[in-house]
Length: 307
Image 1 (spheres, rainbow, N blue to C red):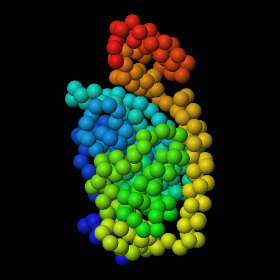
Image 2: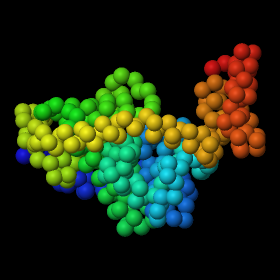
Image 3: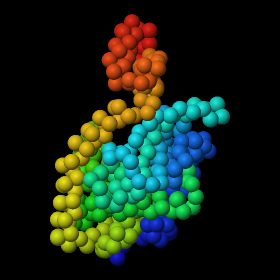
């Protein structure tokens, strides 16, 4: 029925193993430090997970217990911490685990959670084994949702990469951001071990049958009515994707905790111009932006801080 499966045997086992991937001790310490009292776990993801580098900004998702209090989620914040003499920076998204699970399962209009977390992540901190298992189940749901849509968008038969490419092209186009052509290929190439064997496991976990073709090709068994229903589900989210992401950006512009410090670090890193974070700039990062940009432009023009 399927191509040779990973030795872990099931999607649940595969995800549980993936979440236990090694990360730097400083990352785990930072994740624990970021966890609020109601936190169930902290997911670590992004390029730093793949490279093991502590430079730049580390990406975390903090998942909390209880209901989601914010209608437009997640809440985003920026943090700095020095661990054993190493300066660390982090961008942190915080949301309730139940909302994360619902989004990962495709129950909500959001397209970012399941598209993001079908890609590699690690559980950098967990409150206990029960919380870790619940988070692993939610991440597995993201893989199932992504796999179903990948099959609906992809060819009648093809390699797993063909389906993942179709998925990522569609989700990037639906979001309010611009990705370079071929971004989906770079994701697959950089995370080959993660994606090898993942699609058939996710299809089996989602109750979808498929036949094995020549080489690594598969032919999913998706009746036309099921495909039409899935494509309708996707088109609804596709239409709302950009407006929804604009709302999130607008919200983040006024509620991004530590936005001024984050912007100052980014500006200095890319231009070489240091930006002082005054109390007023900390409280009003949006209003302060024109003055900061003017300062950077003047210093760059004077040649004091060449890029």
